Image (tube, rainbow, N blue to C red):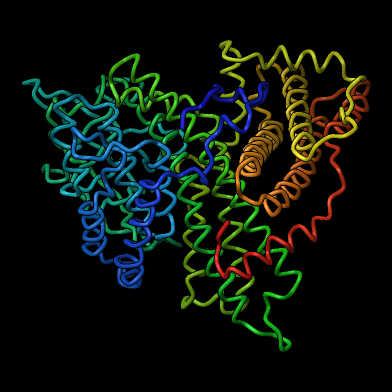
Amino acid sequence: MENNKLLKSGEFLVNEIESKDIFIPEEFNEEQKMIAKTCNDFLEAEIYPNLEKVEKGDRDLMKTMLKKAGELGLLGVSIPEEFGGFGQSFVTQMLVAEKTGAGYSFSVAYMAHCGIGTLPIMYYGNKDQRERYVTKLASGEFIGAYCLTEPGAGSDANSGKTNAILSEDGKNYILNGQKMWITNAGFADTLVVFAKINTDRVLSAFIVECKYPGVVVGPDEHKMGIKGSSTAQIYFNDVKVPVENLLGKRGEGFRIALSILHMGRLKLGANVIGAGKKAINDTVKYANERKQFGVLISSFGALKHKMAEQVIRLFASESAVYRVSSDIDSLMKKLTADCGDYGRATIEAISHYAVEAAILKVVGSEMLDFVVDEAVQIYGGMGYSAEMAVERGYRDSRINRIFEGTNEINRLLVVDTAMKRAMKGEFDLFGEAEKLYSGLNNITSNKTEGEGFFEEKSRCIKNFKKAILICIHGASKCFGKGLINEQEVLNNIAEMMMETYVSESLALRVEKMSAGSLNGSLYKDMLDVNVFDTAGIVRKSALEAIGAFSTPESCQILINAIENLSKVECVNVKDARRRIADKLIEDNSYKF
């Protein structure tokens, strides 16, 4: 599907698009559905029967499972045909990430290989590097890993100490250092390693083969979850890396690392959807079998509330995932046509949507944590038993709020990146904010008589955006350049931005579904509950921010404006949630 209108990253704050301009999962074509089925069948045949073994630390078994995925073509979904892959769209890549997300620790090993272990070479490598390594990574002949984090360099990745010095004959870089938390370390064949050349201030990137003398892999870490994935430290002791294995340009490593992190955040946003659907399916099946007080627990209103919330939060998050994925596809095609290099164009398109990538990462990981937590709660005491899949899902979920940049870092990035894009003139955030701020006394909810369902939701979401702009303007005016140090206020604004983007994505999806042949009543229930909840989050976050930056003279005026902008119609959310839960219970699985 081609978007008729394409918003820039963060531009959703000041501009609208129509439902016809977004992609929704209901539009997957037959090829995409077949690929999804292949993923599901692979998990059923190869992964689930082996989870117990692989969780006991069987590195060889995990490598075998990855190679079997390669035989089915699942490792080459994002790789162009000329390098042994299938060259699928970004939407299809995200669909595969979603489906494999139901594979517990296998999904971590799989995503690390297909993403951060392979794509830096695909996107930044030259033709020779792509032919030597990407072809083998796409087939599963090689398994890849990514080495960025060090004992003293986590979120502050550029502070790493690993060093590379050019040899006297100019043929090799001599690599020394230590990396930690390396996924796939125990069985990887190739590593993308970040190090500083000589006394450089910024990182460079290298392709390192594990068979090179001096590469030493430590024992697997004992982890809370994702126990089947190999996570270990890797040491580099005078490792000779051929100069032709410098990835990209000297000093380009930090840019490569950031770009790959954007990609990782997006893919994680899809990955957690698959894990969430698996947890919901397990939950409803148990609730439909377990009896207490002589009746099935699925008949209890309190548990219907929980199951409906699981569905609503997942469905909303999924709406945002595929909306931005299609935007990336559209931009990718345009940039490829302009520069002719698929790899560079792809990573440029992905990096452009940095605001949305951070949103998906935070919203998705916290959605999954909610879903698996409620799954354990609905199972009761059995949910705490290691015999149950929901116990594994609960433990495995927790890492997602730390992976790909902590959620704390990503919350700050949501606001900071949007503001920086606006400062570059990509969209008029500050002009629109100034207009609103200068007319605070005149702000109303703008409700009009005879509003239709979607017109009302659209108005509410536009009002949420106005509340965000008011807070950005007020905070910027109060703190100036010091705003970067007011992390609590930035968190308030980030919360409003994230929830509003997801609500808008859900609203556009439901409107598009309702315009088609699908009965949209249950999905309108989802939107009713979501917008009602978002209004409360926007109100609370905005008032917290106002308390930090307002003056005694402006405080009440700002509060009145936010109260007007966060007004929504009274909705019977109890009955709406019950209708959603009843469908889940009747189907005995997630079929939304």
